[in-house]
Image 1 (cartoon, rainbow, N blue to C red):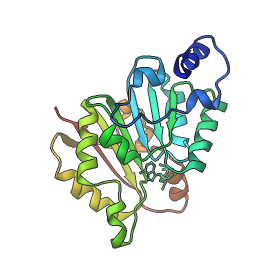
Image 2: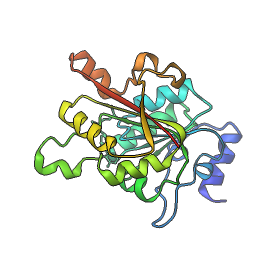
Image 3: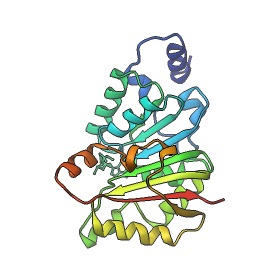
Length: 218
Ligand SMILES: C[S@@+](CC[C@H](N)C(=O)[O-])C[C@H]1O[C@@H](n2cnc3c(N)ncnc32)[C@H](O)[C@@H]1O
């Protein structure tokens, strides 16, 4: 039995969730990610890029068991922390993948697959000579829009004013999305708050949090 089938059998039989149930390998080069295989179930599929310790993902998974949630995290320490946290809390509708989210979105994410995309507090790379390392670049944004289903939502949050303007600029040059209310009760985020680990910390410090949301138009 392949590891994915074994994981789905164990989940079906009600066995305890382990970290290997949660961890999901990136697709091989040239192959696309298949949510049906990764989750062993059907349902709306959401992606969080840079999930860190997984605070937002866990809350969303617990309040919306019908969702399938993939968190991508590059830093090994946080990747392991988040995967272990999901396993301990029995969050069977979450998968955590360690990879470069930019590469994943451009090369491995099928078109029209996401019902929502979450990007909260992406690394701002404030020095000018590092701006090319920023996640929000034209090719990333265009690929992300292609991965959204019609009327799917893309929520973005940052504490960095200059990066926020950069994000607004690069997204404004992209067709296929329109700005929508960040505060969306249907979407399930209370009072526009994603409550990620960074958001909680920065709100305590009194920092301004900049928010932006889009819907795919076609
Ligand atoms: C500032 S933290 C924010 C974490 C979380 N979203 C939050 O709001 O609490 C940014 C996270 O994105 C991760 N990250 C940065 N670039 C990434 C990339 N290209 N692919 C995957 N994760 C990335 C970092 O390792 C870090 O954990």
